[in-house]
Image (cartoon, rainbow, N blue to C red; front, side):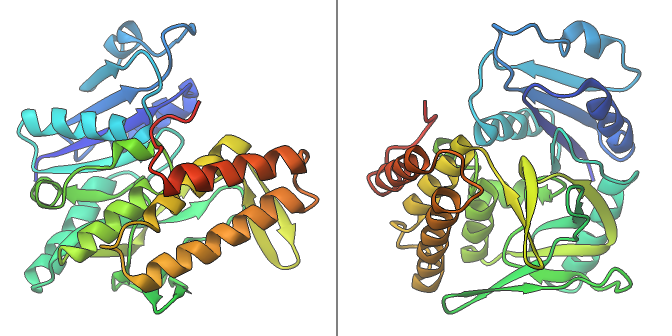
Length: 303
């Protein structure tokens, strides 16, 4: 395996990024940092900082925020040019275990040797805000079923998609399925790619023996026994807009599109009408606009 790590950054924390870089150094040929931090801001992350590291890092500053999907695609293209046969994607605040790339590759190889057409493999992630472990997502009809993953289990768990951070993907899969949808900017990018790969016959797996720490949302609130990750209004805009756009994609099953519709209704109601919303009317208007923009194909960077 010749594997490149791709980290997308946007105003990263120096110490957190350094921990990530050290943890993924073993098992990758090179790490590509694709930085969405705008040039107009004073940024400690630069070529001079990179030059002080004692391992191979390719720093690619975009100068402005082009979104996670475009940054990932730039990193993937760089990895292809340098002859890598795998990529492993990371968000800037993820905390994977050491040897994560090698261990994921071993799991992928075992699945391939068993005759399974693998699209991607990834670790179990634990949300650092809630201490909850991720679940495998399996869709049937209009329902998404969240399947608990036992950390004492060794068998990979089949899932309809993986979050992008920590996912190991063969270059040959990306070349057949296509890269990430840049016009989505952020949110639904990994889900859309996972579903698209699934339609091409590929399967995705969570590896329960590999655990990664990861943070979701801006903060978490409890609603009864359920813990809910809250996002900023702009992130909710992207979530609603991109989900609405996916509802117009007829290559996605009717059951999935129905599920997305129900999720959008829930999002709008929860984020604009509950006590967790500080600006109910303006949030409601923004999310209705997000629906309209998604349904009419007004994508890209929002504002």
